[in-house]
Length: 209
Image 1 (spheres, rainbow, N blue to C red):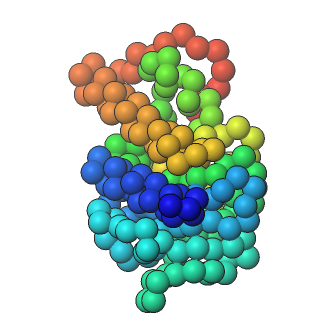
Image 2: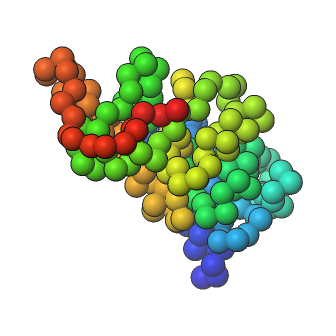
Image 3: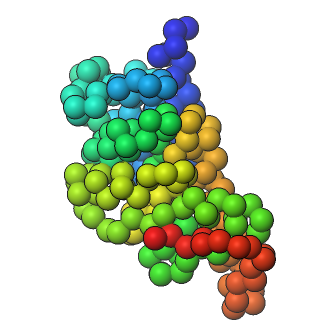
C-alpha cells in the first residue's frame, strides 16, 4: 500500500471513530490531512454518509482550492476553505478535524467558558481559541479560523458551529477534539451536580479569545 492510500485509510478510520462517538454526524463534520510540507491535501466529501465513508470517496485538493482528484459526482466538503487556510497559515499542522461535538458546542453556544477543572484541562485550554461566528463554508470563516490558529493553538471553538482540532498527525488532531468533549462533559456534570465549577490552581489565561 502506498503512502497516499494509507493516509486516506487513516482519514476514514478517524471519521468513523468520531462518528461512533457521536462527535461527527451523518452529514456534519469534516476531516482532512496532508503529508508534512505538502501543498496538497485529502478531505472528506460533501453529502456522503460519514459512518460508512470509504477511501475512494475522499477528494484531493491543492492550496489554490482546485480539485485534483475526486470520484465522479463527488465534491469536497464545503468547509475546504477553512482547512486550506489553516494549512497555509500553519506549516506544522498536517491534520484538521472538524466535529460538531454536542456538549462542547452546547456550552459555547450558552456562553459558558471551558474551565481548568482538571490538570489535563488546564494544559489544553491554554491552546484553545474561540472563533467568532461566520457562515459555514465561507471564506470569512476560513479567514477568522486561520487567524485564530496562529501560534501553538491546538483547538478552535467555532461559535454555533463546533470544534476544530489541529495536529501534526490525524491521531493528534482527533485526540484534541475527544479531550475537549471529555472536559466539557465533566464540567457539565459538575454544574448539574453542584451548580458550580471547581477548578484546579493554575497560572495563565485559559479562556478562548
